[in-house]
Structure formats: structure tokens, C-alpha cells
Image 1 (cartoon, rainbow over the protein chains, first blue to last red):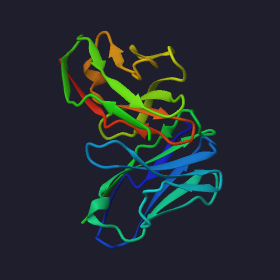
Image 2 (cartoon, chains in turn cyan, blue):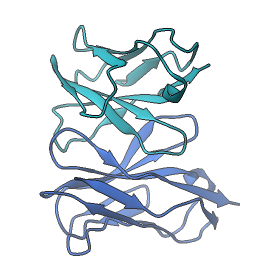
Image 3 (tube, rainbow over the protein chains, first blue to last red):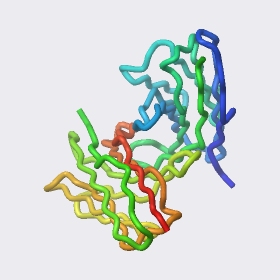
Image 4 (cartoon, rainbow over the protein chains, first blue to last red):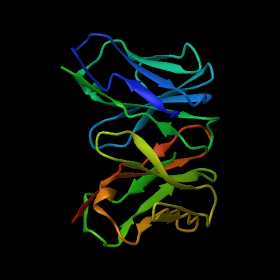
Length: 113
Length: 111
């Protein structure tokens, strides 16, 4: 089935140790998104790619970076994780963005110790 | 700016009870409105959507009507099941490719 896949599902890292989260999609969608969802809160958009065009949200910390080497893959890099970065990270895709449906992966639960 | 306000949970109902989860929004322009559902341990799934005023979205027995005059998009279901237990998120999109979510409402349905 076409889907959005995230790896790993669970990640534990130490304070300050860089971590990379992975997202892949078989939907051939143009737009890929990264959201951060802290416990009992709404998902918050960090950034998105429209094809290779990167769009950062104004309040996304510099500590968070992203790469999209091709249509199928998108990575979230956290350069120096802090305790406050413990959260669920959700990847989503949509065909063209705008008001189209976003399809979410299962998420990666990150714990920073 | 854009914002979405949902009723706080958890909402606890008995099986076959009527469900309403309130959602109101503030937005510039004419947003599309969505309800997403998140089952335990899973990502978000689109439940239903409406793209213009007076549209009604429906899926799996859930319904929501886009009310521009009251800036609302309340979620309803006539008879809930235990399997409907999840967190429900109301969201809007004004066309800039970014969803603005409400804080979510946890629904617990007891047998």
C-alpha cells in the first residue's frame, strides 16, 4: 500500500547528541511536512518542502534542520537536542499542498535524556 | 493570525451515546476545515473535511458542517462505539500549505 513511513518509531538520545529522523513516502507527493507534537498538545508545523523548495516556519528553532534528497525521502536533523525537544515528530505529505489532504506517518517518539 | 479552539477533554461517553466535540476558528480569508483522528500509538488520519461554507463533511458516521456565521465546525456522531476512542483534532488550512491544529480532544467510550 502507498504510505508514509517513519523510522525509527522510537529514538532515545542524550542531551546535545545529534539525531536524525527519517521519513519516506510512496505517494509521489510534491509536499512533505515535519510537525512536532509534545505531550497532550497540538501538532506544530516546523517546516515543509514543496519539491525542493524549503519553507521554514518563523518560530522553528535553528537547532532543527531538514533535508530532502529526492521526492521520496525527507530527514529531520536535530543538531543539539535539548530536554525540551522530547516529543513525537510527525511527517506528512500532500499532493500539491494548499487545502489538500495531508497524509501522516505513524510518528517517531523522541526522548532526550 | 489563524487559530483553532476545541473543547477540552477528556470526553467520556457510554457506547451508543451521542457525541459532539465543539470546534471554533479564527482565520483570515476562507479556510478549509478538517477533523483528524489519532488512535493510540498512531499518526493522524483524516476523518472528514469541508472546503466552503455550509458544506458538510461526513465519514464513518461522523459529520461536521462548516458554519461561517458562527466560525464553527463541530464534530458529531449519533452513536459512538468503543473503537471510536481516540484523540480528535480540528484543523484549518488557508491555502498556504500549513495546517493549524486545535489542541485535541480525547474521547473515551466505555462499553
